[in-house]
Length: 562
Image 1 (cartoon, rainbow, N blue to C red):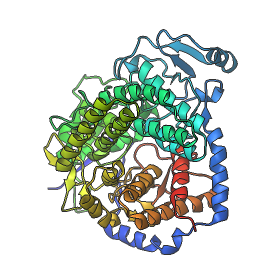
Image 2: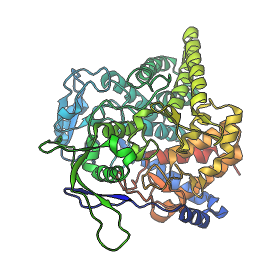
Image 3: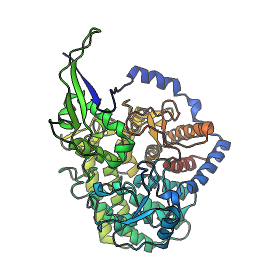
Image 4: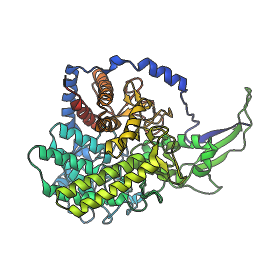
C-alpha cells in the first residue's frame, strides 16, 4: 500500500512540490548550451561597467541616511540599536531628529553570539556600524557577512579602496561590540555568523593599499587581532563537527528564524509537506501536537491526513487528521543552513534540515584559507613563531579534509556527515572551494576539472543537478560560485576552462542587462535568464545586486585581453 500525506496548514491550504524529470532537464540543456552565447561585446561591457560604478553609490548606506534603517523583511518599525554603554555619535543624534528613528541601547555587553535572547527585542532593528557600507540591494538593506567579500573585491577592482576598508572596519566593530562577524547587522542576526571570508577581505584591502604604494602594517596588525578572534569562534564548541577536528555551521538561536516567519513563511509549509510525505525524515523533523498543547507564538501547527494512494478515481480512504509541527531539530538545522549562506538547498537534507550534522567542504576550506592568511599576516608582522603555528594548523586541517571529503570515484570533494560517519553523495558546486583555497593536490584538482561537466551549463556553473525548486540548487547559478570556481581553476592552471566559464556567466549577465537594465541576485544557468524557478524561501530575484556587480568586474578584468 502506497501512503500519501495530505498536509494542510490551518490557514494556507494544500501544497504540492513539483520535480522536473531528468529527461526534461537533458532536453532543456541541449536547447540552450550553444557556443554563440559566450561572446562579449565591448559596447555592452562599457554600459554595464557604468551601471556598476554608479550602483556602488546607490547601494551605499551610512548613519546619516534615513533609508539605512529601513528593513524590508520586517518593515513595521525603524529602530537603531547601539552597543551597550556606547555613546551615540552626532550622526546618530541627527538621524534620530531628521528621520524620526528610535535609538535604543542593547541590554548588555556582548562577548559572543547567542549571549542575547533575540526573542526579547520588540521590535527588531538595525545594529549601528561606524562606517558607510554597501548593501546587496532590495530586501537586503544591511551589511551582510559573506556578500561583503565579493562586494569588496569589486570595490577594490573599481578603485574604491576607502569604502572597502571601511566595510572591513565595520566587521572589526561587530566582533568587538556584537560578539562575532555577523550574518548581517540586524538584531535577529545576533545568534549566528556567516561563511568566514574576513581574512580574505583583509588581504584584498591590504593588497590594494600596498599596490597603491601605501602599505599599512599598523592596520594589518589590528586586523590580525580581530581575525584571530573570529577564527576562534569557529574552532570551539558548538561549532566543532563532532570529533573530526573540523568545524560546522551552527546558530545559537532556537525555533523559527525571525526573518523567515513573516518574509518566508511558505518555506516552513513546504518543508512540512515534504517531510510528512517522507517517513525516513518525518520521525526526526515532524512531531504530533498533543491535545491541549500550545506551540510557541511563531511555531505553526499543520493538519495532516495519511491516505492510501488509490489507483481509481475514487477518493482514497484516509486516517483521521493529526495536528503536527516542525521539531526543534528542524529549526536548528534551518538556522545553521542560514549561517552557511546556502539558504535554501537540499544539500544538507530536505530544506537544509540536517545542516548542523555536517562538516562542510566550503566552511573548512575557508578556515584553511583563514589559517594560511593568518600565517601570511604573522610573517609580515614579524611574528615568526605564530606564523609557524598557523601553518601547522592549516596542514593538519588539510590532511583531515582530504581523508573525509575526497571522493576519488566521483572526482569531487563531498561534505561529511559526522553524525552518520559517512561522506555525502550530494554533488554540489562547493567542490571547487578546495581549489580556490589552495589545499587540493594537483591530482585532485585535475580530477575536479575533468568532472567540470557535472556543473558547467550554458550560463556558467550551476549549484547542483537536483531540481528541487530551491534557490541554491538546479537550475540556478550565483556570482560568488562563479568566482570560486573560476579562480580555483586558475590556481591550478586550467585557464581555458576558467575563461570559458567566465565568458558564459558574463555574457548571461550582459544579455539580461541589455533586456531590462538591471543586474540580479541569481541567474538560470540553463536558460541564461533571470527565471530562477524558486518556490521555497523567498521567491523574488532581487535587483542590485552587490555581489554580482563585484564578481562581474573581477571576472571581466581577469580575462585575457584581445
